[in-house]
Length: 593
Image (cartoon, rainbow, N blue to C red):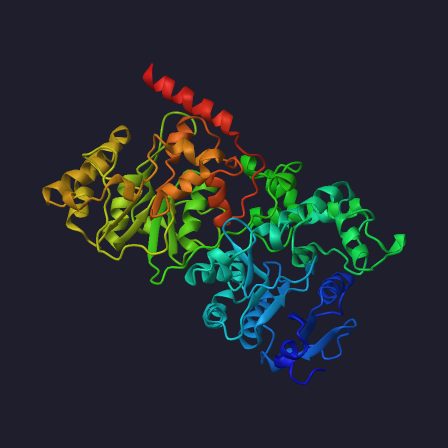
């Protein structure tokens, strides 16, 4: 072992690359990574908890505890499978701060000589940087900041943390550092280090896609093998890749060969990835850690929301996570739900608040709802009797819902925030003012999308008192809503406190079509850059006949929101934007006729 690895690069003139490993003996895939960096002329140091780990010639084994004392930090997937990614994240920041030089994950393959830049970091996607391969100067303030923030975030990643928090110390933190230290100008494009994205991991085993992937990586510095994804799929790493695949060519390039009987089958690998993704979506849909024996019966029982067995795998591979910032002062937001199972767009809205650390409370009379654990469910009967809010009508299976009455009663009882379920939180911090009201498109009224009142507000008391006269008149319940509230706020001289409609609805109900348009996704992103809320106006597009269970068009702004806020909803199919335009055109034409 080298006695002083701090001086290695200075003495030899070779670039130093540091890596971390814990777990079983190195497989051919890790050996491929190590060999590629040795071939690039690097001094390679592997830090491990296993002092007897066998490493190839040209690689030095060091004790990770000399750099990062203490136990190995792990997060756990919902099925209990542990991952040492947390410790790997901490290690890379500590190693780069102390030594400077290069850090590389053991599933990065170096394709050419190491770049000589003082800093190397690359985007993984248009919005997210990845730290699987990095280079920084010794004692870099960026890495000092990374260590400080990583340790502060660690408690949020403990066992049982949602998927949106488990990886906080990885790409989300790296991306935050990029913005905090204004590093955007030095970042390499994804094609430099991640020419093959995680969603194309199965393609690396597919001989039919070898030429395509070779072309994608032809001018890249590195390629990422996404071993963690393969490990989750349970790909046997002691076997070689299918003959003729991109991975086969990569192994051959660095002197590795496999007997035919010691190779994976391309068809088997494709099936394993499909089965993994399908079972993952079944677990999410049923909100269970394991797939029960009666899973198909349970899915059938979900009716229109059941997974299409033929389409679920192909249409919705794992989403590329887009990081969100947590609120420094989380608040409680409340809403009401009645009328059957919640759809994906309502869950999207509520999840956007939960992902930023706000407590989401949903009041309902329905005890049979399939209820996500990240929502706090409350009994609506504690606020007002069900018979005052939900009334069966003469038409079969039809009910009237007096949501305004419940909203006013809830705000009067508890005060604080009300949000409609189809409102998405775009920023992190909610206003701390006692009152927040927004003017609707109708100058005389208020938007119900988002509002905040002090507990026991006098105007709400007046509205509730006068709402009693409408109890037996479901056809007039709309008069006891925004109209009545605006009337009593005006009487108290409070309507002037209303903010403009854009405060809750920066995309108006007449512009909502653009949320589905992939061609306008960047334009919508720019338009909403400084907005706090986004009202999806789902009532408008449901009137247009847009199916509530279908996913948005791939690449649309709504698609980006679903990637940002993971709700575990397996879309069996997606809306075609051309169809959606026709639906809206029919609705507008019918409203004019």
